[in-house]
Length: 276
Image: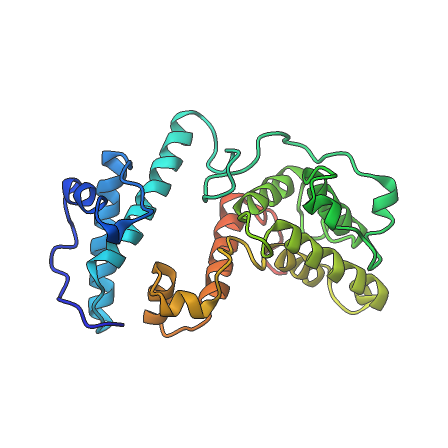
């Protein structure tokens, strides 16, 4: 990290955030966070500053405010949905932590011909990429694959929580050229086909098969289309925090954190036996 003056004024005022937002250093950041979210963002900046100082590092104020502003915007969105009586994650946008499609609370109908292709390596994901088939159907195929593996009952996963979790994960994938939800489903379906071909159900326990499939679905969640080297060299907020922690796997840590957060918030494993 570049040397920088000690950050003593981390808890900056809302006015300072707004003034700084007009500068080139803040290009692309939104200055429209509510007063509550800005105050929370400032507290977040102070916490980050203290944590980093204790670790023996200093951070440029720009990086801290960038993280604080993003945190504030996410908090404002969550508060807005809570006040409207909607759970975080039910907006149509897939660009933030609070978005989950509202088009259907149930699994969509499946195509029987495609269902038969799920256990092969010839399933055509590209027609979903092109928009020739409804992407919502892919969630139903994930459910079908888990059902085929006979892992839902042993793990005590019901349809409601599974749909909520898969919808949240799908919404959190960004519209980037490659590391999007279509890629996640492609990996999941390919692994499922290989598991069937290799008869891994005779080797792996139900909870292990379930964990493998969920890992496939989540493995690139919230990928921004930029690699680890970019985040580290450009000193993005994720790159800074990962570097300070002594890690180099910026995206892998991020994907895991987002997945664990959504697993918790959607209560997917609420009834799963603790001894599994």
